[in-house]
Image 1 (spheres, rainbow, N blue to C red):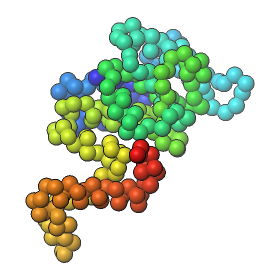
Image 2 (cartoon, helix red, strand yellow):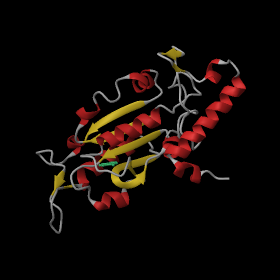
Image 3 (cartoon, protein in one colour):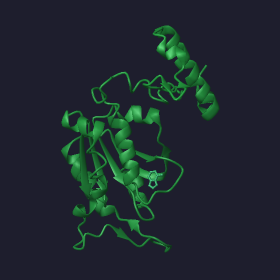
Length: 228
Ligand code: ADE
């Protein structure tokens, strides 16, 4: 899978993808992440990418030309499954959307800034608009990094234990059950006995019950979403 990220702050991605699973995914050739500096695509001699809004008002608006040139260039090189704009007024990012995006071969993610981008780009270029939560970030970079991380870790071969993405919170509309490691007794804080019993069936049952209990306590909305 290839992800092209368009940004005016390429340095913000320096650390984000050079560690742990995402780094491994790239070195194993399972994922390719390309960062594009939007200013490189500006026709303006000062590499300008924004301008004043028609009709007035505070803040600058990202112009069509640099974004269109960058996306056109990428589209001339390969076919994209999704061209995504990161914006707080997009659809809320969640696990099903991460699952869906992980089936893609190529995606573009555009990071917004300032007051927004020229609406005509939203009408003509982007296939989806995604928000990572009901709050406003200074730009779409951190949001793009979140989406990229959530998607790449789902690619087959990225996680060492292939089943571990399947047992993530949210994959079955349940939060994950609690987990423990050694020692089984830490200053009299004892690991639930069933987990050290070796009884696989009982362990699975306990984990399911705890997942339901935790979901009911913390995210009852997720249980309501579950189809009967
Ligand atoms: N840009 C600014 N805030 C954002 C958010 N919450 N999600 C996606 N992109 C954003």
